[in-house]
Length: 188
Image 1: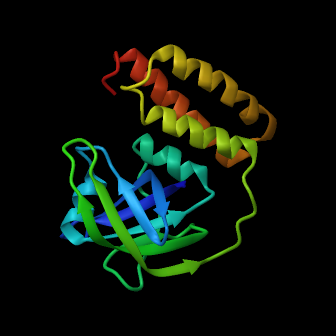
Image 2: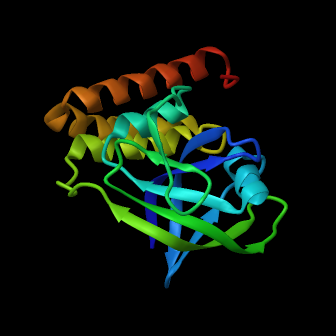
């Protein structure tokens, strides 16, 4: 199973980094598979820790992909690091094994502490649309434009029917990023 999460890491100097990432859950382990080069990967290899955040505020997913990474954090309890202040739950992880690969290494982590902060109220279709659009944006250099455009056309339906202010803002950031990417020939 893959869960769409936000991972918070720190480098060896304690500087935090937030990144949206699908995390594989296998038995009682979290498997993080980041493509190289990747700051999240570097931070986990440096500190051997990470925090997986379960969050329903899709602005954070969209924001991290569009250069908006300044979200409130709180200190983790059992590891050196941080969790998102507005997360529903978080799991503090320690790296236990690395399956190295020149393109996409696998980081096997075990949870050392988990906290539920508030209940999950469910996703609306707009939140789903933002998450899927964010995943598309993370693959702009790997997917053909016609695929991206057709997927976005479908995702817009859910946005138009169910979006609240948070989802509308997140969608706007993503669409602005795509336009900038198009206008600069893919060099955004």
